[in-house]
Image 1 (cartoon, rainbow, N blue to C red):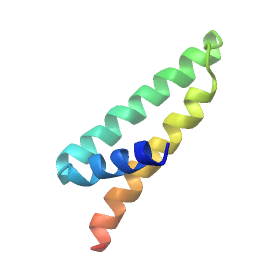
Image 2: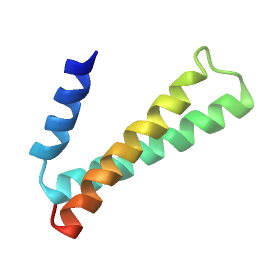
Image 3: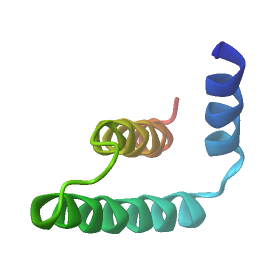
Image 4: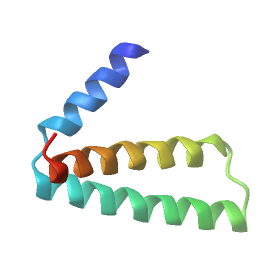
Length: 70
């Protein structure tokens, strides 16, 4: 499992700034749709919302690191 996280982090680092920002906005829209569909009709795996939120947070963290110069 640790290897999967490393690959996801490396994937985020390999993206340029514009691609990372567009990916963040796409994932945020997917999260909104998922939350809405869950409110209307319970989804099969409600933990998907939690997982998606964490992925968005990882992407935002990488974006912020780039702004700060780390």
